[in-house]
Amino acid sequence: MTIATIPTAPIEGQKPGTSGLRKKVAVFAEPGYLETYTQAIFNAIQPKGAVLVLGGDGRYFNRDAMATILRIAAANGVARVIVGQGGILSTPAASHLIRTRNADGGLILSASHNPGGPEGDFGLKYNIANGGPAPESVTDTIVTCAEHIDRYHILKASAPTLDTLGESSVGDMVIEVVDPVADYAALMEDLFDFDALRQMFAGGFTLCFDAMHAVTGPYATEILERRLGAASGSVINAVPSEDFGGGHPDPNPVWAKRLYDLMLGSDAPDFGAASDGDGDRNMIMGHGIYVTPSDSLAVLAANAHLVPGYKSGISGVARSMPTSAASDRVAKKLGVEAFQTPTGWKFFGNLLDAGRATLCGEESAGTGSNHVREKDGLWAVLMWLNILAVRKVAVDEVLTSHWAEFGRDYYSRHDYEGITADGATALMSALKADLPLLPGRSSDGMTVASAEDFSYADPIDGSVSTGQGIILTYKGGARAVLRLSGTGTEGATLRVYLEQYAEPNQAHDLDAQIALLQVINATTSIAQIKHFTGRDGPDVIS
Ligand code: G1P
Ligand code: ZN
Image (tube, rainbow, N blue to C red; front, side, top):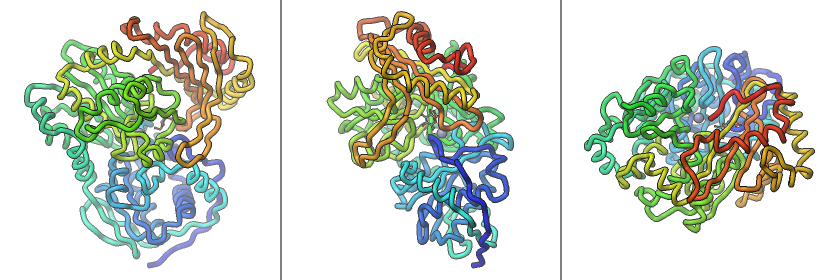
């Protein structure tokens, strides 16, 4: 085995954001960049003799990056790499494979819902042996290694193409190419009542799943159409492409517009859903109704016992801090624990490993459970379908009956995209400096009850994460959260999360922007959003 050791310069200030390292393709493709960063990961994890899983969402640069990573892995003494055929694995499927094969970890190549193609984004994320994203202790070590690196090791031989199932070797390392769908589909068969679902589809239930030309196409076609009998063509945009058909593979009303419009029209199928670039996010819709991710988590928690994989109940529900309090209300009624964690799936890992939480969710279209250690788009779809198959009611009835029982948490997120980093930082600093003065302050008919700079002490390992966003709690059941995005690749993005609770006996049929008008206006003024961003309003409302 001939290894080249190549001198390289440190990579400074490349702290992975909310979800791994994400950069423009052009940055990852710069000579030595991917090589150096991959070596930094290996310096941090010391992979001699390790078994690793490798997969990506199939975006532009995926194959080239795989070939490079395989050569560096071999040069660093990795024993075996399990890789999805064609270099493809959805993020939840990669998480499952790490767990089911007892691998030491995995590398996932994706920039999630960010656009792909030569001008688009690329990303690299390291997951640990539990199948989940590396915790901050590990990502901090990777950053330190990247800042001190001076060489990388790479096999001189080229890596094999990944199109043929089975084992081959490169240097002393075994490369095992596996079917990307098979193990994942088997896990779904374990969790859900496939007979009941087959009966539902045989009885005429209709569905449209938008795979957004991204990685879930083959997974959704196999599970929904082939195994469950949904009509052929129920999965749209099913063929993955390197640039996601030129769109953003982001399952929301803006980017999944064809599906969104279909579901609000008169010819809507019974159920609509979409997933993102790497298959971990979901959008859920019924005829005439969009389910917010916060509500979806609450509904799944309240109904989980109807699904075979969760029939003995759930131990707890964890949600990211900006996610609405809807799931807390369910946890309270069920008498199980409710957790509020910082943004990012990695914060759920310890709670899931310790059995303290069974379901987790984020307002950003992420929902999942202890079946893997990533959020899982298709899993969320199957949860909903299984619940509908048991309850035999439509999506809108599930929601209205949920609100009648628990009340409704009106919810919306306002994003100010591409603002200057200076403006964004100044806004957050001003707000932090003002925190002690905010309680009691009134604006637009709202009064601040408390103001907090959110920090989280992990209940399992005691690690503390500070500066995770500002929470303004208003009197009367309203709340606003302000934080800066950690996944962007251009400028800064301010996210403002808004919620207002309506009791079970109050109106549940208002437009969310109307129900939230006062909290929107009060927050805009208290945080001086116009002043610091120079914007009159958000770029994206979801
Ligand atoms: C966004 C979401 C966050 C999610 C992350 C990775 O991060 O808001 O919930 O965990 O993507 O999918 P942000 O850009 O807000 O840092
Ligand atoms: Zn994703």
